[in-house]
Structures are given as structure tokens and as C-alpha cells.
Length: 70
Image 1 (tube, helix red, strand yellow):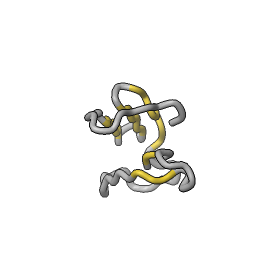
Image 2: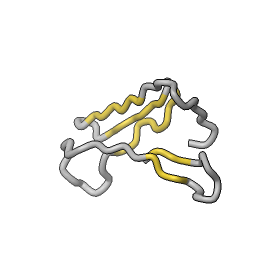
Image 3: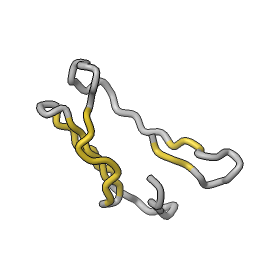
């Protein structure tokens, strides 16, 4: 998300809401909406919770501190 800033060493809340009955999910980070009312699947895959992973990935290896969450 462009423009989202955070401070190292500060705890933030990541909240992910899944609605399997309506095939929708939303997410917020530190009270700011990251995604809203997105489909869990668009291919008719079974709606179940397999696992959840979080990863921080370098956005630009040549620019320290540019990362995104996945």
C-alpha cells in the first residue's frame, strides 16, 4: 500500500476478516484499510482455511527500507 508508514519497534495490529459464507475478505493494518470486500476465490475453489502466512519482501533491493507485505 503506497503511503502507509510505520515505525520500527512499535506494535501494530494486523486484522484480517474472512467471510466464507459470502466469499469475501478484508484487511486493515494499524486501523488503516489495506483491502476491503475482496473475493477469497474467483475460481470456485473450496472455501476453507488451509493456512495463513505473512512475509516481508524487499520491494527494491537497491533501496534499503522499501518493502511490502504479502
